[in-house]
Length: 240
Image (tube, rainbow, N blue to C red):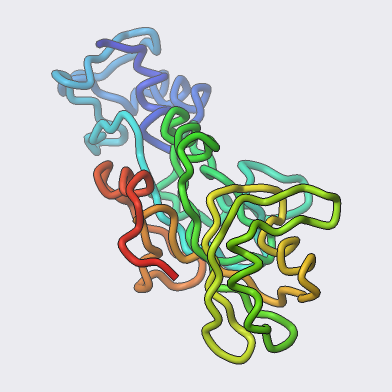
């Protein structure tokens, strides 16, 4: 299916539609080796070769990135006061329409997916899909043995909200591994608060069967294959 060249370029690069139009007017774009002068010329992603500044664009309908989100950045496309996850994304990964699929709090770290595939994000976040999220929570004091049972029962938050059954496993003197299938606002922190604990650090390490790539340093990102990205919809092999 053919689409306008300015839209094509904006979808495959960090350029906006206006910037793509300017690049075309400046004769920086070729279609099958010929310089293009009009943004409304159409290209077929399956048959045509589009190049910007002499470099051919490899067309991808959607992209899926795994980020090891660091502390201090917000999960948003833009923010007037704070740095966002898109602000720290390497230039070669930027393209029109990218957004974080789900959110991590500003001070929460770990696995975050960035994509331009709205249907994918909707399915991943839909309560009907029951996609699990796995976290490591560091607490302000040693957790009691009752935590596992309380998570399985379904914790009632301070405002009366009842959480679905989850899993919790004590790792050491102040760290607990948690699995939940919901995404309420600050849910893990609020669940522990309802039990009398304060979460001092929180890291998401897995979504469905997709685990955080530990080779990624804080703030680093890598592209995933579509098949890899789809593993969020698979049940994890390991339970807490």
